[in-house]
Image (tube, one colour):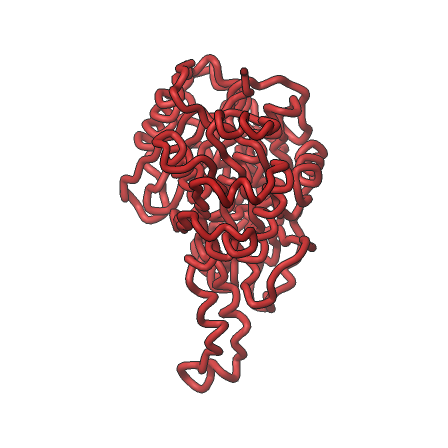
Length: 400
């Protein structure tokens, strides 16, 4: 592995998810292979043949002036800072960054408009409700909650790969010396419009998400947020931080080949680029956190790309956590990065649940149904977004 002049490490994890909150709750949910799927509660699903989603039952705190996605993201950021054991005064005195990925942000608030208002034509929006629609509110709300008044606050709307884009942005900022720390992650809550769009595309599963399974029928939506505290190694060591993992590298590709279907060549190039940036050989990777949506088109393409990167028959174990928490859109890659850190630090492989029969077009070890004790030293996190916005991150066990 390449040793860089300024190494980048993860020191804190914060999670809001349908299978558990915080480092311990989320980690336990992953180990136990929990499913967060259940009936949709936030809108009337009459007229839809499917009504399943992975909703978050509860999470700590939140400003009622913020929308749900923002409240979840702020809660995850607060948990991450607490997990990092960092005095906020230290962060307030250092150059920093808050990078949050999202697809729809607080757009669920549009569902609060009544049918009566809509029937009158253009509804009269409450000014507070209208302000929630701006994705830029999400990192700003995190900064305000933590009292970080002198940080760059950026939203990355790179759809399903947004969380990895945010982590990559943090890596660049710290490597270049523009920041000593970064809060990187994503938050999202699907709304009725998003559900209806995917339903019309025929991409939603009726009961469960089954990545790589011969009988897979599509994705299940999820909601939640995940935030990682990322620091320059020297900054972390100077404050006596506990280091959870090291971020070795990342890569992005954006090809605009098709509105929804990723181009295999660019997915392969993205993963190879991340390994090259990390200075890691393919055989060093002990686990892949796959995009793994459980759709007919995505899974074979992703498996074929993995075979190109690692060689046929040489692909390491592949976990698809969307089988447990659903597709959390702009938060999905951040949830996967968090799962990767936990896998490295705690010594296990998260399972791909709901698995019955492996699709012959997906010849991988998907860690079916049950987590597995293991010691992956290096993990590749793969994320694919609509419009060809792909992002891959490589992280490893920290070695002094």
